[in-house]
Length: 349
Length: 245
Image (cartoon, rainbow over all chains, first blue to last red; front, side, top):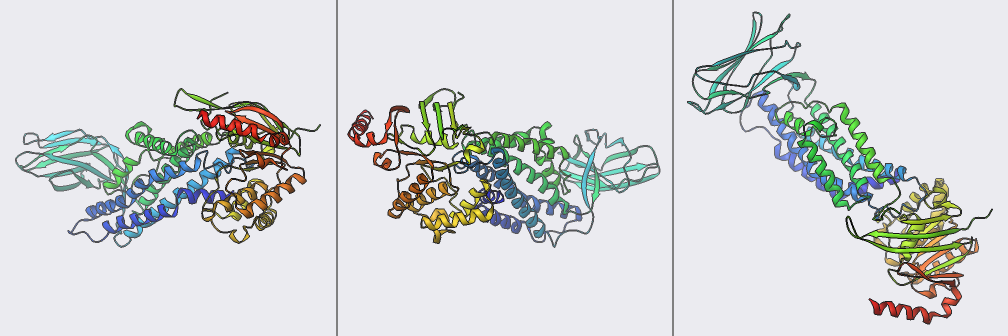
């Protein structure tokens, strides 16, 4: 049976596809490696590294439809005609083939993770990396000359956590404006002040509050552009051991997404053309990415959110545990579609 | 109680020709009964349903209607399929693997121990003249070699029922000799044979009975020797069909 899995692996990830994938990965890694052209602070450097990672991981998304197609080709009645007369349980055959597809997905995911981390090996910061721990309430507002500050309160944070407030500007009497973000806990306060010319985050470590809430204030200092506080602007960040956990967070999602997609394509190919099966899986994936509710359950469904977090220089949150359950359910569905005796194009008797 | 080697009752198969509507019957009301050790020839022009019938008997496709029993077991059961050897019309085997690897893989699916399947594979590959190409990917095989390998894999596990779809098509000279010898041996050890062909002389010395399929229906059934004697009738039938098309 392992030989059959190895054959499924070879067919899902043939040498030409592996070589092409490797070449694209190296090009993506090379294109985004090297020192930045301008001096940048640690936060900006984290964002640059995040963009480099996005470059490399995006190659995997290009590969996904091809993997689905290869897996679907494996499951067509024509491709399995030589196995059909063998005295093996159809469910076992389907499982063995799916295992081969899964190994192919594991191989490409591992390769992407290794290349993305190897490309950034010399630029990884020693400073702690950050991950989104949640969202805090913040009132959307526009700070004008007549109302230059905004105050609100938020629950106190655990030690070591940070607040990140997203702001942007609207045309006013200048293209930019200075913003000051303050967090107070009793008499203690943390302040950050920055010149804002576009969408930008203000980050600070709030003072430890013995009890009670944090008092937050955003101020527009001087004249210039209007300072805009968009909805859902305040994030709570927590430190993580290493930026390299990005590879684990994205890799888990990518592996679950690819494996589930391949299992579904394998199953659907029993009933339709391989290309149509792959296109159906791809369409379902795109649907899950555009449907907010399904994101957690569908494996890889929260990829856009993780991608967004990565783009903001953060380590994406780990894949939700129920996405593993979703992957198992959908993969089982794929196997169930694949396993029954060949229906081909026949009609029920 | 002795079971029939092959029992086919009211077998019918139809294919969809469109997404929602449209279907075409390719087999209708086929009835076959073969005692162990018998040889049956399925004769008919292209498109008459011979290959579809064999695919159903081999478990590759499912019938739309009717029943198929092999040595008393339903065709979909593992017990039935373990006793069947099938030479398909095309060449569906994985082209990236060598013949030894494919035989080994099929052997593992038959539940044969590694040593047994290896020795069986080597002996058969030697027999069909493919021992030197044991590791050569099947993609590099000529048509004749492919046909010899198809025969080899069907006989690898000493099947009790042999289903051969156009076994002589594309066969090279050494292949003919091997086919003749191996089928002779299989018959000698009591294997049952179903041979689909449009060349009626293929049945000589191999089949006692013959069924002529036309448009998926049994047009004639009887002794193979009679059909061989009346080849003129079959040719006239072929001519009629050719004129109709």
